[in-house]
Image 1 (cartoon, rainbow, N blue to C red):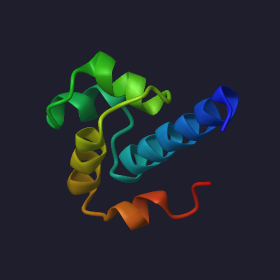
Image 2 (image 1 turned 90 degrees about the vertical axis):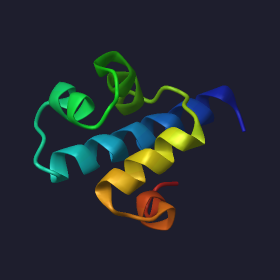
Image 3 (image 1 turned 180 degrees about the vertical axis):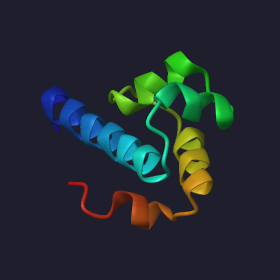
Amino acid sequence: MTQKELEKRRKRIGERIKELRLGSGYTSYETFAIDNGFSRRGYWALENGSNFKIETLLKITAIHGITLEEFFKGIK
């Protein structure tokens, strides 16, 4: 897998994280971050496709009450 392909996949994961936030009724990433124990800057980076630890993804899925399978459904 090329670096460009990895970046594209990370970007799609970030978009999915943003979709979940918006679906939860949070229009502000900053408010979501503060309410859920993330730094504003760190959470912004997640939504923009930064590389992160699996624990972070597990925390996000737990906050939204979904499984990893549900999170990744439709992401290629």
